[in-house]
Image 1 (cartoon, helix red, strand yellow):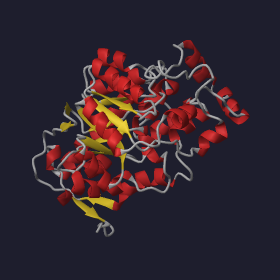
Image 2: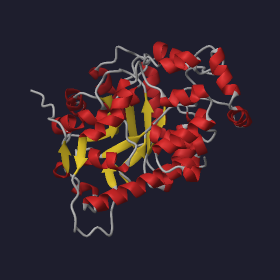
Image 3: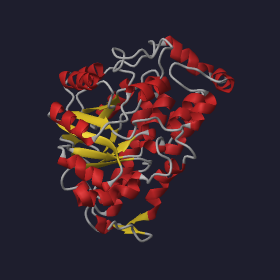
Image 4: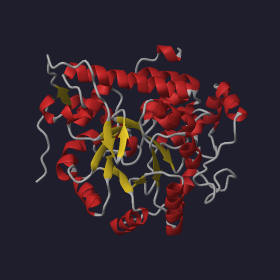
Length: 388
């Protein structure tokens, strides 16, 4: 199977599975506990149908949107995700370059493997910096200051990861950073020697956003240690309000699932919220992001930008989310599997297919601009939950 044979998310996933050692593939593909929320993220889109209009004159389609103060050419962006150079040696360099080629936004994670400074220097498209709330308040301020100094406009605080989720696939293989593999996990690496050769031929793996603050490479700390020892589960709205004030710019919360939390985010000065359950990797049994979208938009959508992130694998998923009031849609595994399979060409092919699906879908819906999408072109298959 070759990259040109990939025509959808499932194809990219299969190609990545062929090329990645099992522990790494399962790190991307896996989720928490029984993975029910992970499955529901994708299935939730099937509960809503699109109603197309005809004879509307749709020769030219404009997919651009304004979100979090940024103008982007697509209503989708590459969400910040960790450890990208572990999946492919180009890592965030490939993601940022592909996003720039399509005129859209990308995110860099605190657990990213390329520095935010390098990416800001090389690319002109908007960059979001995603970070976690640490016990060390000075560290939080230092990370925000570093982002500001390299010109990042959007700060995105992840609020659903004050402790790590129960990812049992990783426990079975022993996946961690640094590697502490089980015998079964080591055997799976041995079955994919090309990945290991490629990994060793390129620059040493590192986490440059954190390398001044925690040593991940010497065996004295791991990703698990980082979550349990450095992140602060006592974080409150007052803490975040202080950070919003200190940042004094566009501030967004990622991991909001409750309407009242979105309202509170607006009240403390946030510009946007990302509806997300962390790809099903945190609280299994929680609602799907799409299931919560309408409720959150109705509660707070006129006060901040509401973004959807979770389970999106098709252009029609994006159209449904935008019709319900999302300002943009974040992509995660959708671009990570192509990245793992083929680096920058893989991410570009995935974004290209998404753009084609969006243009085709807009034409079939009888729409020429994103702001023409409304709930009028949707029908729900089952009665909707209405909060008191």
